[in-house]
Image (cartoon, rainbow, N blue to C red; front, side, top):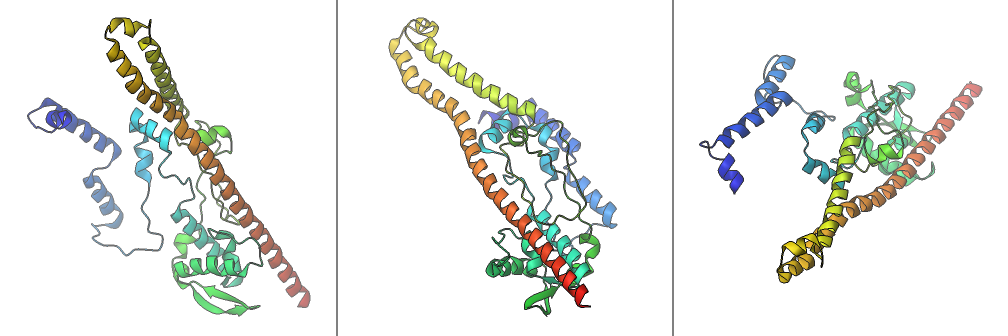
Length: 326
């Protein structure tokens, strides 16, 4: 109520101060709608009212990285307690579909068509073995349906597909660039984002889909340390306040009414102590949950890698048999 009275009335100096702060932030971050329209007009030569949607038309997440420097202590504490947004560290859905499109184009350039087995290393839920036909069909058909694949006969009893839409849009999908990954596999990178990290980046097409591990926070090392210090100071402050309100304490001598000190000790102090402990219990509970999720994702990654290796050996054997037969 006080904020709305002070900052919501044009007759208050705080209203114009807040407006100037928001204007400065919008200019610095480039969020004004005029700048966006000017950017579209430079790229397309005019304001596009409607553009045809593509299969890879997904919203970007650049605003999250641009606004990271404006985060206050409350925002840092919320991420420390409840985790980063988005919780999944990658690859994102758009990155997965771009990888699958590049894998389809690579397989199509080698064989002229794509089978369901060729798509098995890139599904979300990989089959446990190369002989699990049902998982091949479920995961592979989902990818074929997404890219509007067309059946093209069969080879050795396996249906094969072509993708005319991907061929028409090959200039957008044939070049695959793997995004940089700041996670070097250490515990420091699991807890926060290190300041100096050697990011591995490769333009080679991965042989399988690899999920990145979940991370506790995406804070910087200084921000993570600030949250830990805030929690410790909060816990120590509540402990000192409880001692000062006990008999013989500083505050108990200042407050001569014992009923007041009793109410504070048995109500307010207990509530403050509960939240001071909860400040560390929540991240620790998420830590256990994330470790379990990472174990499951590593198992899926291992299954995809084993499938890719097995399929590669099968293709090499088939080529060797064909060359010997010819």
